[in-house]
Image (cartoon, rainbow, N blue to C red):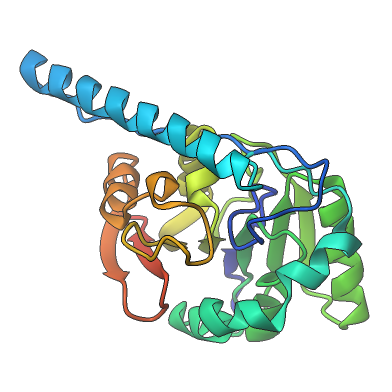
Length: 266
């Protein structure tokens, strides 16, 4: 039996896989940041100008998004209240969770990770895909972490471990085979620090898969408005700067989202 670890790190940076209109009283999440490439002064100046415009657009998008009821620092303090929405059959139509899990090509001895697991929408599926392995579900919200643990017990999934993480540190164990993040990248406050920790936790040859919303998806599609979405090329470039290798990007599997596959060298 392999002792592989897939980090099902469900960080409480639960993303726009959640509905656009959360219950009243929940506040918002922070926007992602991007690290510009190093280079000559001229290139650095162009990069700074680009990011200044980008952040201005994101700030406006945040204001617009907030006005529509979607907040960046949601407090998901009542898991029972949210689970009916996060686990809705309607979501499965466009999220295609079983197809996403199949794309990871898991083997029974792995343990799986859900970066931003929330109520365990992907965690439970990952646990069933690695019956001899281990799934680590991480979330920022204590109530979500507790909910996932109780849900796993009810479903008889003894291979699920829960971890309460922080916004810049998912607090992952070392030696992970796979880390999965779904609909959360565009919410991360400090992506370089966060994914630096993910990179360090992956074993040599380990896989990170980021699923998020296409920049060119229809404005009325699930998820954030277009100005807040992060293009898959930007995601791949940012993770490459952290030392991960871009294997491929799949824009065909899901109607509104892409999957970016990054591999740790080794």
